[in-house]
Amino acid sequence: MQEKIIILDFGSQYTQLIARRVRELNVYCEIHPFNHLPEFDQSVKGVIFSGSPFSVRQEDAPQIDLSLFHQQYPLLGVCYGAQYLAHTSGGEVIPSTIREYGRANLQYIDETHSLLKNIPHDSQVWMSHGDTISEIPEEFEVIASTDTVKVAAYHIKGTKTYGIQFHPEVTHSTDGKQLLENFLVDICGCSQDWTPDSFVESTISSLRGKLGNDKVVLGLSGGVDSSVAAVLLHRAIGPNLHCIFVDNGLLRKDEFAQVLDSYKHMGLNVRGINAKDRFLSQLAGIKDPEQKRKVIGRVFIEVFDDAAHEVQDVKWLGQGTIYPDVIESVSVKGPSATIKSHHNVGGLPDFMKLKVVEPLNTLFKDEVRKVGKTLGIDDVILGRHPFPGPGLAIRILGDITAEKVAILQEADAIYINNLKTSGWYDKVWQAGAIFLPVQSVGVMGDERTYENVICLRAVGSVDGMTADWSHLPYELLAKISNEIINNVKGINRVVYDISSKPPATIEWE
Image (cartoon, rainbow, N blue to C red; front, side):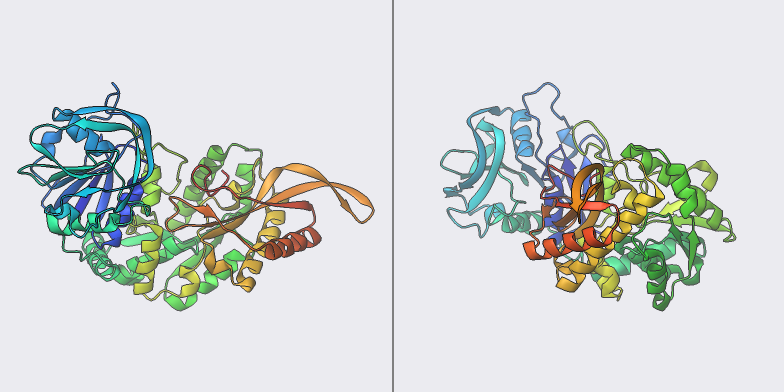
């Protein structure tokens, strides 16, 4: 049984970062909203409470039954989690006299406690809270302080419960990784054996047990996620996997032929379906991004269902859903508010009568790539930029027409080809061109033009949960802009997006 850490999400912007850091230490973990608790079995080695935008003093602050965890599992409360444990145990949490946000240093450290082993005096930590713990209950002991925060860390005597008012998961906490490792290994007893190799081995074994001799259909996109999911399933059930690649008319230029060709050497059974006209006719006149996603999801399911019916006795639908899709699609009070819908997450229409198998739904994007490397998948596929399921539909702001798709495909191809030839493609996590719903005045030759605007987007990221805009060289941007304006009829202006996530998202819709 795979050992794991449960991270309970109280709504912090850093919750996913905690999971990333735990997994970097080769310990498997899962994030669950505080009000949608998972089953706690023998595989659970410890629990982490996240921070929260709430104050423990608010009437509607997140609440949880501590008897489920306290003294049953090692427990680490981070920021709100630490304040909640103190507050509900009889301590006092008050508004900070000044907002404690930013870098601080641990002036006092009690190194006799396992949590603070190998944490040096004056270690830099990152504070981000408007409340502070002013009084702790009798059974609590302070184990770290800064010059302004007396209770920077505490331990509840006679237990494996700890609280910290800083964030060890952010890089600004210079010894945060060491603190987390202390909690995971010394306090929880985790064996740190969760690796790409172990994931592949256990997943293939699990898939064989789950699927037996059943047939599975899977929609391939040419991207990392669906490719890795396909190879895992192929290793498990061989020819019982039937892959389908649908051309929805919203792919990149020449992508349909290129993707089909890329799978030839992988031994996968792939069938390509041209459904361009069906998708574009259904999308005609629709401007709302959520409506676009829903229409594309519905038509994809209809096309896919038609193709799946041609495979005799199929029982399962394989999907390349990954963990960020799952996290962003959970909507509860407080944590994980839905940012956008993911049409590849959730239930299927009753008429499909297929069970869903998602071998990657516990992995972040960079973990999927590591698993793909272990499986021997070509670097050309593994290094491919993420591409949204709805394709260019959410990179064309406003209504979608065949003409706009053609214009964007040409501009995007020039952009991506320049990134590749300049050596920037592999330095960027995701890039794409966006067709804006505005026209601007321009001059070409002696003529006045009134044509469309293309926005270029390129970001650096690890897993897509956060991202920073890429600082492409001015010379490269100038070359790309010049080529697009000179070669793509209908475009007379190119701009570059310098927004980070948060507050912006990577895609515009």
